[in-house]
Figure: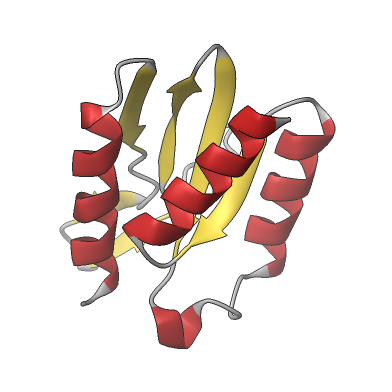
Length: 112
């Protein structure tokens, strides 16, 4: 499965959880039709590395960075920093490469 397929599978799973509200975070820049490229937002409040899936699960902020099994260890510094800052402030942020990864983290978090 590619990253998009994994992402969609995770979102379908999260949609089934009664205490979860989650969505795809579109982090691609703004398309410039003249140069045929995506440009970074110049908004000073835009940050790099925001996770692919954001949401709320059982009252806790949720951030999931989706990677394929081959790229699971290839998390950019900006993505690592986002997850660090997110978790430091009480969120539940992690990297997942399958629905099973998400199930495992959520089940273990609920046991705490």
